[in-house]
Length: 81
Image (cartoon, rainbow, N blue to C red):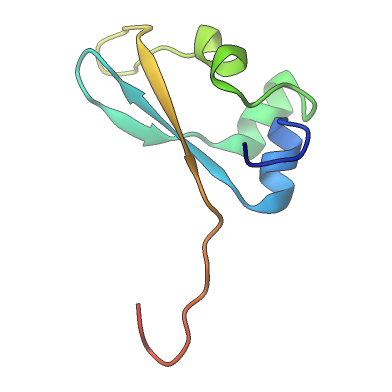
């Protein structure tokens, strides 16, 4: 888990992201964690079982959603990307 306490606020503070992927149509989108935390609270859990019940695919309206934790961006040096 990204944060020591598994919350949206912890993920934001540590620079993690969360991608939601619809298992019905494969539409994927990175969640806007600051907006989500403003709506449901910084202390809300960031684990699969905490978030998936609140999500629905914007393309097909399925509630079959998988989440992927995205590590913080690591800067590159020397022009290597």
